[in-house]
Amino acid sequence: MYMYRKCYRFSRRGVSPVVATILLVAIFTVLVAVALSVAQDVLSGGYTQSDSSEAASVCGALGGAVSRVGFSYGEAESVSYTFKTSSLVFIPGALGYTIEFSDDKSISVSTGVLIVGTPATHFSYGGSYFEAVYPPGGGYPVAPSTDSTVWSIQDEGSMGGAEYVFTALFPVPQLVNTTITVGGDQVWRLYIIRLVGGGSSVESFTKSGYISVEGLGEEVYTYSGVSTISVEVSSLTQAYPTGFFRISAANAEFGGGGVIVQVVVANVSVSGSVI
Picture 1 (cartoon, rainbow, N blue to C red):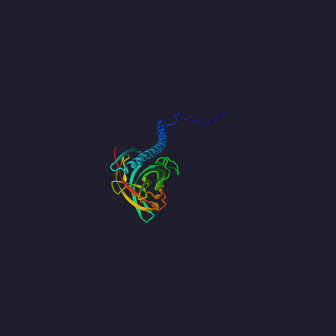
Picture 2: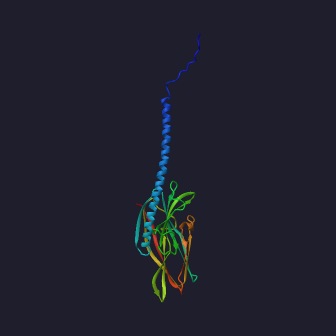
Picture 3: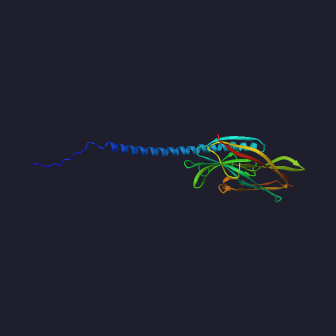
């Protein structure tokens, strides 16, 4: 009896070399793209850490430089810097101080500020991050200060929907007891540094170079019979509100029949040059 069997033939050729090559190239391309993306994230996070550390170092050094040249006419110092992704700008007349005296007199001083903005897309210190870069360990600035005429702070915030690590350098009025007496009245001095640039517009600096500061001289205003001083702080730029600078305004009380207060305003120029 004849039985019919259905036979199947299987190809031993497998996938053609052309198709295999295309598949391998596609897989390799995907792997390279993923690796590049991961590497870019790692590099960007590293750049943020490196640049924010550089910004703290630079602004710390500049804080000391401004303090030294501020009240020494003609003295100048320079600090070098190099950034990968950060932006360095000087904003003239960005911060305002109004000092009011107990006899209803007042004086207003505006100063420029230096700000380094470092993109924090792939790295974050955390929303509560804050560090006083200059003076070291100074905490939040208070006006009038008893510690320094210049402060530099670093914290994290957003601008235009993007996260940044900001490092800012700005003057803060400093109140000092001179221990000098004139006509039986004690003399106090309120030192204020005014940072000035080359014009009235925002100045953007290159990714690497030098920041130079130079003392341009000072002006002295004398007030007698002062029993209290109050300081009002205000931001004069829309880009950075008053709260950005973390300055707490305070009052100073002298008691008795009042004292003599000499307000010493020193001008310091800020300029940049390419390495």
